Amino acid sequence: MRILVLGGTWFLGRAVAQTALDRGWPVWAFNRGRSGKAPEGTREIHGDRTVKEDLAALAQHGPWDAVIDTSASELAPRDVLAGAKSLEPVTGKYIYISTVNAYRGWPNEPLTESSELLDGPADAGAEYGRLPANWDGPDWYYGRQKAGAERASLAAFGANRVSILRPGVILGPGEYVGRLPWWLRRAEKGGAILAPGRPEASIQPVDVRDVAAFALDQAATSGSGGAFNVTAPVGRETMNGFLTACLEATGSDGHLVWAPDDLLIKRGVQQWTELPLWRTSAGVWNVDSSQAQAAGLRCRPLAETITGTWEWMQGGGRPVEHPRWAEHGISAAKEARLLEELGA
Image 1 (tube, rainbow, N blue to C red):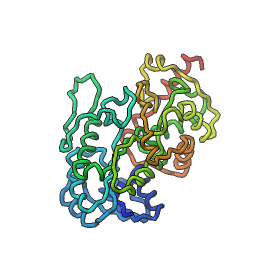
Image 2: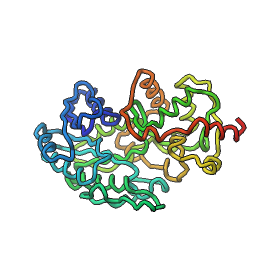
Image 3: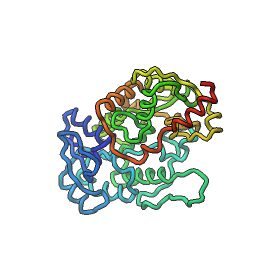
Image 4: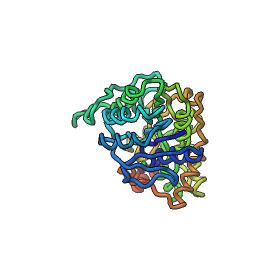
């Protein structure tokens, strides 16, 4: 299998490239060369996806059995469309990494692949879906852009040659967002640790290596496409299991102090960021991924993801710098006030 990865230098793109190389497949990676290097053995091609001449030059390196698009998170749908059209003549299949944000009902409703997608035309520009500054409703901008990019890939390749993967939260070695690394550092510190919500609350993070493997499995499935939610099974992992595994991985003597949802909300704790992965919306961790599991998705236990990430951190692993890292984690002072209120 000849694979082209759009991206290939950090987190998911790098995991895709490395997993393909481990399978003995020749791998090309197209990127701007600004965020590190692809794994050793990858044939790197530098260029900009928004530049027509760069796309034309890239196509000259084909053909490929499949293109795996991991780097379109900040591209407008029309840029995804232009790139996909330029690669279509030299590509068998196109794997587009989307997100559950593309659904109109996320995070408030349980989701399946038949759930309604947000609007977003295949040729939309970067301004499509932006909301006025005084808007106080849901911000669907990112989801609209991703839904439009999904339609762009389908417009260029047709339904039978496109697989769309919609992950939720991706964790694992190389994570740049900072959710799991923050919890690991907090566990390492020890003491009383503010634990959010209900211990038995279900969560569904998926390991970056498992997403990469599933994307490559889809690349090898010619003549059929489809859309797949890519998450751990509903109900298999819990917040208590997650935090306990962080304590065990770091060898911490810390102990968890559980704070009810209503208390955290009342005290203004920001969901999703101050205590990463904590969110009370009914659908945030209720994403049906049985269709992907039937197609071959295998999700390792979350404890393995946590251990692997800690080993990467201890081994000197550094993520690509990203502004979202600074969004995550509650301040020590705010956590202390809440722990005191809880009698800890």
